[in-house]
Length: 246
Image 1: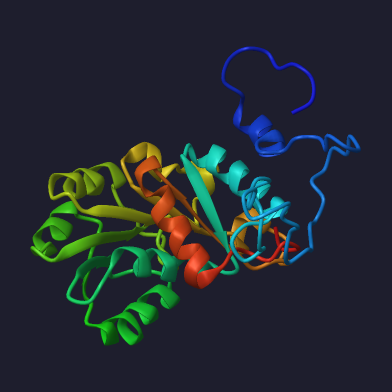
Image 2: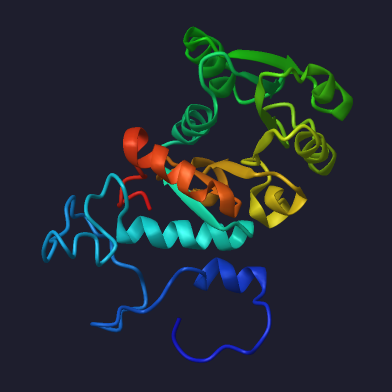
């Protein structure tokens, strides 16, 4: 950031504008450029990735600024951006579910989430329980010894039903299970799932982060222990959002 800020926590509106953004050291440009390069020059094998970038599928300077901004707004340790909201969903399920595992998923979720669970991940030997998350007891009753992930969505798409994230997160922690919440319809302006005990907060940035019907994207904000796991899955199979979209 340029200049000196008053000591203390910045307001949400200020973070919306300035979080993650720094003027270009070389030119002084205030706005982050769109880096359309696919690859980045490396000085040597010994200095590989010394500047933080190698290949845009894994990380890109423009995308990195967006990820820093969203992580700040979500009160997360880090964030990973994706080409679509469904890419974010698939990454979370791929990273934390394996053959034989079980997931408790809300019975009122975005249609793509429900379909990818039933038509893709069930084919991999992963099982799902679709339950009414309005009552946390339903979530706890659905847990099995093989449950590895609890997947909530609030407000739910399209019915806008609500989930008590603190209560469901308490259930998840009691049973040592990860809890991810799709908070697309709320945005960090109204809801910060990580502050309520969730391990991951997921958004389709296509909706309200963009707001202009110009881009498609997704993001997962995470607590510190999960940063490397989500980032590794992003680099190996999914890839980040396209630089122009960021």
